[in-house]
Length: 469
View 1 (cartoon, helix red, strand yellow):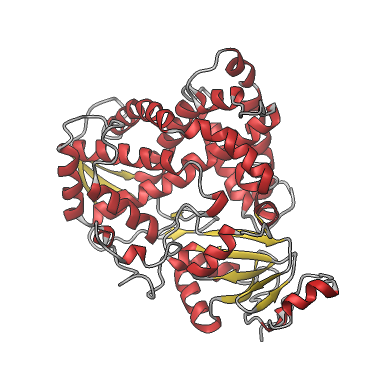
View 2: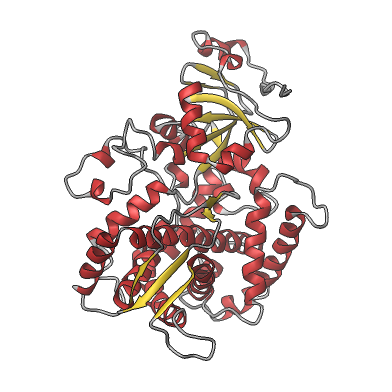
């Protein structure tokens, strides 16, 4: 028989005046749920089959429940109304830093997502200058040659001979290209001789952030993540002087010279922290989303042809800033890919004030998590939620507008992804070039197997066959 430790209640002392606000709510201990296995909790089934696990969990325990994952007791909140409550946080009662620090602090120290309230607003305000429309246009112009070069080389032998047809693993090849793009756009230069080490370092810090063993014991993922973080810090610190002396249009330069209306600027340490987080976010989440878009177009050749024809109608080899919004079919495919596989499936937070959530008293110090992955599959808001149906986003459609917080692959509220437009520009530019050069498909009956070491990714690297047009 499975023996488990009971789910704990955060210790809190509520003064008598404050307590009167919670006289008509049920106690925290009455929230349903189950801790799962000792220490690991429900980590393994949640990571193995997250959508199925959450669907069954929701049916059994409802929208508000308690669970345990990686040794942490969690208040799991499912559904768009709870997404809205937590992400908007109108009373500044919920901390992103405290919610994420267990997973991210040693590896993404003081990244934008780990900042709260006034500090977050200040840093985001300075950083926004790097994501304005005119900057995105410059970034797109930097992306296109890299995409062109890499997608051509995908269809060559090692000796440089062009191939008409090739099956290869898309995910690792695109991941390398995405980091090349992020390096060129964000840092203003190509990867140097240490490029492979840099790629491995980013992979190691992401893996370490969700490691079960959370001590720097040699040989563990956590230890490798600590060492990778040290390497990344050295790399970015070494480039700050040249960026301040000769700033370019890249994001790194902009962070080095950025200031707000009051003259506030970033310190060297803040620049390094932001760059490590943004580089990870820029290539990791975008890699997964692009992979899923290419995957769905490989399985649904009718949609691939629709996208190809509208890209051809632009009559340009490279996507330009003037044309990024002229691809309605591609836009629908991207939105559906983001729904079916949110690049960041859940958002941990921690309460810093006592709250009434759904009629339950939730004390300060409670670890909470909203899960977009589940919301995107709720049949209360989506017809046939497991089916790929881009037409649900067609102009005039109401399905994707049933609730503002039913589709939120970029999060919401003050911490909504600052780089979402950059990522969407990259995805559009990649698909535009691919459709002009190739047709692609997967073997009959293929279904991408996912592993979930924090962020979802293909367990098999996603084998896909490209053919030259």
